[in-house]
Length: 103
Image 1 (cartoon, rainbow, N blue to C red):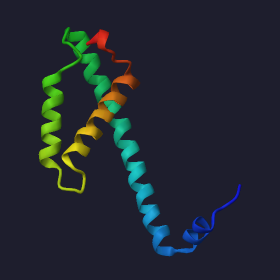
Image 2 (cartoon, rainbow, N blue to C red):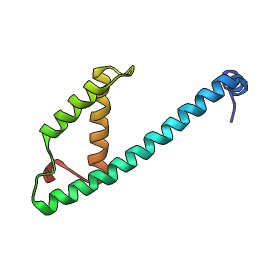
Image 3 (cartoon, rainbow, N blue to C red):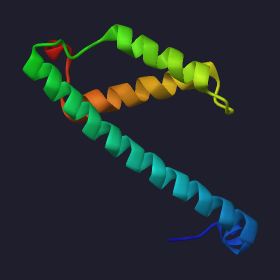
């Protein structure tokens, strides 16, 4: 595998190396948080199934978006928050086998 000059040079840059390691730590924390979220949502889905409560709750999803948008203090735009939540919800439903038919 050929390494580009930019890649080779960036490996020697201690500031860049440190920043990338910090990004990797954040990525691992995100992965852990998403896995924990999946476990919790699986518990919620099972509880709803046993209680006869519909799995899909559009009002809850709207409230989640409102809460996240209002609580966002970072560089992510409101549109970005909405896109992130939509991606998380899609991934969660797909991973747990929650389909429109089971709503």
